[in-house]
Structure formats: C-alpha cells, structure tokens
Image (cartoon, rainbow, N blue to C red; front, side):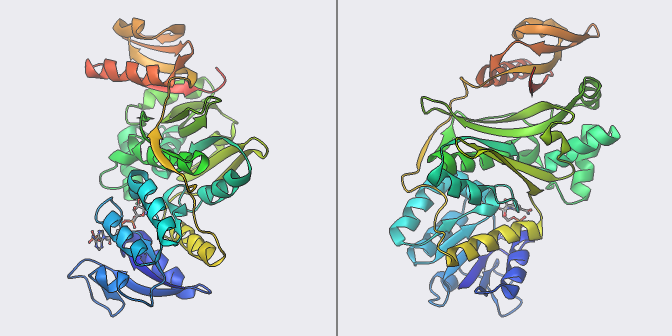
Length: 384
Ligand SMILES: NC(=O)c1ccc[n+]([C@@H]2O[C@H](COP(=O)([O-])OP(=O)(O)OC[C@H]3O[C@@H](n4cnc5c(N)ncnc54)[C@H](OP(=O)(O)O)[C@@H]3O)[C@@H](O)[C@H]2O)c1
C-alpha cells in the first residue's frame, strides 16, 4: 500500500522513516509548504497526491482543522484511505469524515490522535463492537503529567515546571491547549465517539493545571495525595454522556500515581471485560508515528473504521457526574461551595473538602469566582 504523507514535521518525518522500513507499506509523496520542496519525494500541491492513482492511502500529520479537513475530504473522495494523528481535526469534523469515508468505501482511522503511541482507540473500537463500554478516560496529556511529576518530585513551581517541559520539547511554545486541559478534552471526545457513537460538541468541561501552585502540591502531598490531570467519559443508564477533564487527587499508591514523567495511562471499562488500562508514550516522533503505522497496517489487515457507522455529533451532560472536591479559595468566598470540612485556614485563604457536588456545578462555581477576580484551585478527590 503506497502512503502519501501530509506534513513533514515532528510526526511526519517519523511516519516517512517508518514507512520506508515497513512491510507491505511504501512511502509516497510528502506534502510540504510551497518553497519547501527540496527533494524529489516532496510536493507542494494536494492535487499531486489526490490525483496520483498510485497513492492508496493518505496519512495527515499537519495539524489544525483547515486545510487538513479540505485535504482529507479530497483524498477520501478520490478513493484514498485516510489516517490522521490530528485530534483537533477529528474532534471538529470526525462525524463528517466518518460518513464520507463510508460512502467512498475507504478506511478512516486515527489511533495516534488519542494516547499517541498507546493503542487505546484501536482496542476500544474493537471492544465496543462486542462489549458495552461503561467508561473511558485516564491521563491523556503527557506534558501536564510531566509538569505534575516535576512539581511533586522536586518542589518546582508551575512556571519552572512549564519551562522545563518546553526545554525538553514536551510543551509547545504556546502550551495553552495542554495546561488548560483542552488537548485532553479533544482526546476524550474521540474516545466517547468510539465507545458510544456520539461525538460530544457541547456541554464539555475542562479544568487544567494552570491555577496549581507549589503550595497546593505541598499541601496535598502532606495529606497523602498525588495530583493527576484526568479525562473522563461515562455513559449513564439513561444514555447521557459525561465528558470532562479536571485535576484529580489520587492516593499515593493508586495506579495513576505511578504514571510518571510524560507518560499516559489510558483506560476503559467494559461491562464484560472489566477495567483495562494501558501505559505508554502519549507523544513524541516515533511513538506517535508508530500509531499511524499501526493504523495503516491495520487497513491492510481489514480494519476500516473506529467510529460506528451511525456516529453523530451530540452533547455532553456533566450534571450527573458527582465528586467531593479539594478546593483552595479566598476565605471571603467560603459560602460559594458546600463545605464538608475545612482542611486549612491561614486567615486569607482556606483549603476545604467539599460535599459531593456535580462536575457541572463545581466548574461553574470556579468560573464565577474567577470572573469576580478570585484565585481558586480545585481537584476532584478520589475516595473522599
Ligand atoms: N508531536 C507529537 O508528539 C504528537 C502526538 C500526537 C498527535 N500529534 C498530532 O500530530 C499532528 C502533527 O504534529 P507535529 O508535532 O508533527 O507538528 P509539527 O512538528 O508542527 O509538524 C507539522 C508539519 O506540517 C506542516 N504543515 C502545516 N500546515 C501545512 C500545509 N497547509 N501544507 C503543508 N504542510 C503543512 C508544517 O509546516 P510548517 O512548519 O512550515 O508550518 C510542519 O512541518 C498534530 O495534529 C498533532 O496534534 C502530535
């Protein structure tokens, strides 16, 4: 199978190199920007790929929604299989791409878009065909996991941990999508659609780690907790789907606490299979390229889709997901949330354990307080 590659950056170079060494796959033309065609395998027009009858499949590793979506539709309509590592594209346009690919009779796979090298979507898609998936989620962002691990193991503050992540190439120059939880949110959107055939486009909530301080970390470590940024998706009995990202305090000794550095831990629970978790590299050139190659080789072996045929855009509802939360807030705002216990009080700032509140209410409460200029941090507490 001859594979054209769109984009020759971090992942694109890895995909091209791996294609050269792979059995039953061969590299085709690589799309780069005009002005960057410096060798004979590079082209600068998508027409040179969609119009090339020798190209069987297209691997998109450019990023962004446009022009990736336009190029994807052109490739699919030209009868090429389409594989991508681009979570922003699939989160925004996955339903349309799934429909178009099925109409054209080609395959549409995107393993690398959630979990990088960790084969969560690949396994989830297979499990969802024969088992009822109860929940999906986990630690899906390596950058923030690296930062949390650094803050916890070295006492670094947030700014220093971010700087180190950037120096090591784990965080982008603009780290907003990582630290606000948006990157993990896009991944959980994909996992929900693979599990339940609904790609949630509204009602989603993401709280990142950008309000976390070194003092917060010190405080919950003294209480025996480890903070992780966790993405969660769950389907209730009535069919409603919750989908959100937020910091979670797990007990030192829980599985998530052992996920260190920039690793991911993706999980799902099947009614029959029970809980399944996978730990591995969620990003990086070769881990991500390996997931793209896994999809391409899967196509050769008959794997064709990750979203179910009737997958639709829908809404998340986070009103039924309920947790107790650890919260740091100004003492003057103590009435904003139902308090179960005051953990610490320095006269200006209090640290509390809340009663059980819904994810929706907790995120709304923090948003209101921040709108009023107040500084808050919150994290769900496992087994409070
Ligand atoms: N890096 C990872 O570890 C990782 C992990 C999982 C998923 N992903 C996803 O994989 C995708 C690629 O990530 P990356 O890290 O490889 O990004 P990257 O290093 O920025 O590479 C993207 C490449 O695509 C090129 N490109 C962008 N738009 C183009 C266009 N219209 N025509 C031709 N070339 C174009 C860029 O060229 P210019 O430099 O000239 O703009 C760049 O060379 C993203 O969707 C990302 O979310 C990445």
